[in-house]
Amino acid sequence: MAWEWTTNQERVGQYPAITKDAAPDYTFNYLILGFNIVKIGDIKAGARIPGGILGYYRDGELYPITLSVTEMNVVAASCDTPDITVRMGTFTLSDIGKAQGSHSEPVAFGIKLNNCPAGLNKINYRFTRVGETADYRNGVIRLNSSSTAKGIGIQIKHSNGQPAIIDGTTKQIYDGYDSKGGNFEIPMTAAYFHIDNEDLKPGTANAELNFTIEYL
Image (tube, rainbow, N blue to C red; front, top):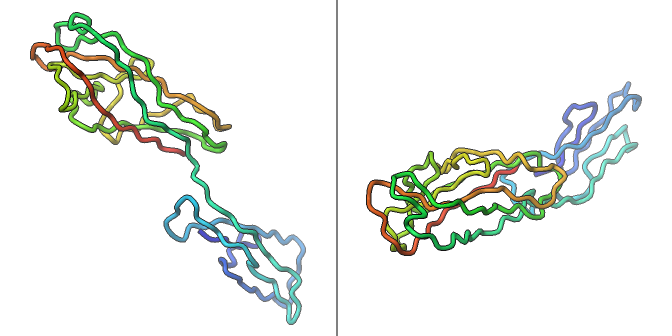
């Protein structure tokens, strides 16, 4: 990134220093000076915009205006999003149900958004599978390879009861965010879900899922 100097909303040039000669009939009346931050390459957190003299207005040997800026550092405009472990607890096969599509009692959990800075206007989120999905539109993922239970998946839903779409691309809007910043939590639920037509078999039943947060 770099500073850009404008006069009366017209671009003069970018850092480092630029000199602009005044026209013979130049006047400082109604002069509006401005600074923009311009992207000149990939931007990473911790980037630095150097300070110094940005430019001069020159009239012969005189320099009636000198424009200078101080150094600016770029910080990541994001929230802290810790990993989540959902404690599903213990269920019997009858708690899940014999019919395909039946499920256990949902367990509530939340995606935490901590230490969010002020100025973020909107937050979107999306889910990406780690293993296989049994029904991505219905929010159902299959158990991981170390699980011993059979015929069971895990269904992820929003707190309003709508299934999460797990395709890695569908953005879902978190409408509880406040642009003033702070700590927030996206409420979700997880439940064991009877998948396919195979008989249920008890055992360990674990799965993983990735979430991505987008800040606007």
